[in-house]
Length: 211
Image 1 (tube, helix red, strand yellow):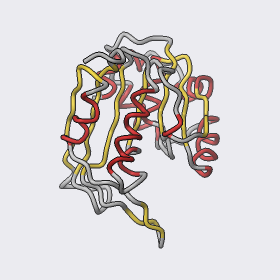
Image 2 (cartoon, one colour):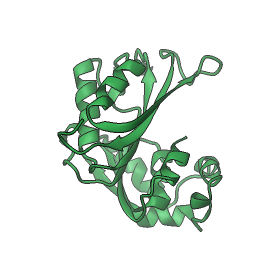
Image 3 (cartoon, helix red, strand yellow):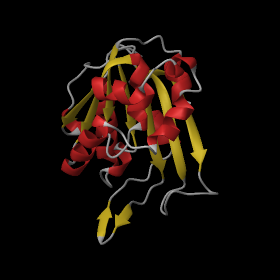
């Protein structure tokens, strides 16, 4: 769905950003043929280290994601996605709350705003910061875990805030237009316990101060 939206967006030779990349490349790959540069913006030291390693030659499991993207001619025309990611990716360490305003032409943010805190105000602030970092007219895609209760890795608990499609719509409504929100049910094969599905949203940034 993100591929199909981006491929007809009209954006080319752009500066893109993936906010909160984590150990995840498919949002950046989804912007690759549209961008001259893709900023992988991440807070965690360990994720920054992982991204540097993957930038040089990303691992084979990501080929399956590229195969899906290459179902569109725009992506299929990329001769070597590994080489292009190595050439175009810029890895930057920073906080989602400290993004500069109106800097990028296209952006993605997957499973970040709802997964950094149990405070809904911080969820809204993180999503607002992402939207503000994009220029007016910029296409974007963002994904969220629905009704997440957080998760544990070993003995470490990671927080989350439970949000639904109405929360995403409310946050996007003041900043974006042509909004599409799709709920992706995961009842048959959840990735982990503690959430009820996924929410994918896409649209374009409005001019500041306009409805």
